[in-house]
Length: 339
Image 1 (cartoon, one colour):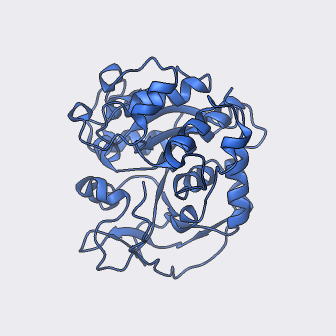
Image 2: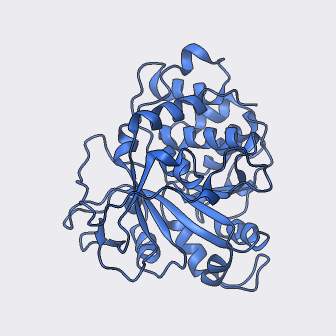
């Protein structure tokens, strides 16, 4: 998710600015799939380029064994968002990746964006949210089966599913409540929401989708470290411009790019891909891990602020050190054949 092209926020300078290389345990290059990072993606895919392109990249890296994509959940009430996710996955040979829909998806109150046209052009077996479990139930079922401390949740949209998981009771394969299950099975949450406006700013980007849920997660004692990935490099990540000249018409990334930008220059940045690539340890040299000793909080007006000191010593604010390298890496992955 992202805001309007006119960014209404400024980034608060983070008081601690120590560059820390990502841990070797997060370097995924060359790993076999059973050793690869175990990932669940929570996305507001519906109308923005960054969600579709990040799902495309995730499929590429799942196929080559760099990551183990355990499941994808939709966090917006677009009844066919899961069908569009299934279309992207199926085009990449991954039609069996589990999908979940946010509670209340049948209300179908969120802008469909490109999803209707996407599912008209690409094969898919999921037709609507009625064909998949609710997101919280899927989260619980997946997490219950994973080794302890092994899963990274990558949140690219609203907080509704995360809050629901946090507040969930026993069931769906685990006797633990939501907080206990997260604490046992999840290593960390990586959140694409790293714009920290002034304290008087209104809810922005992902908080705006569901502010009560955002508040429940940000200030509700989420039991693992949270890495907040700076949104400004996403704004600057204008990528995918060569897809219409280098890929076949049925390549899923070309399909979405053409629907959105009519094969012209990129009309939006890629806010989500930086969070995804950081989460899996891709190119650790381009990231700066900042803000040690602080954490995010919801400001009085509803936007985010960074608070130091904090009782969450392991949270981070993640900044991109090398924008050019980031953009080149995203373009490289977007251009990989779907299968």
